[in-house]
Length: 121
Image (cartoon, rainbow, N blue to C red; front, side):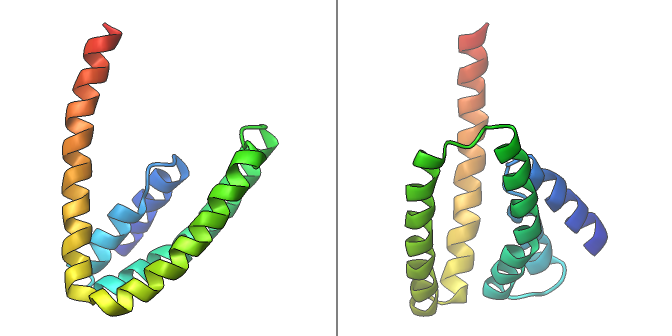
């Protein structure tokens, strides 16, 4: 199961769709890993995927560096804030927040996908 979860997470992550959702769900529900540890594992897992994607997209000229660098700086600041908030919020509430986020994202994708199909036809 771990190999399948890693494989699917890698494919989905390489396509830019957030394979962390698959990996975190596997780790928390099937491998009995705590939410915060699962998120840490997920971050380590995606470092090589992010580096490979950065190289490929950069070679294709698909990265707008003037836009990307300020966003990356904001992301680094946000990550620091996220680490701090994780200690305050706690793993139990964080897990519920993550689950709720996934549900809302799924609902959005279902309805936005329908709207886009209606507009394109």
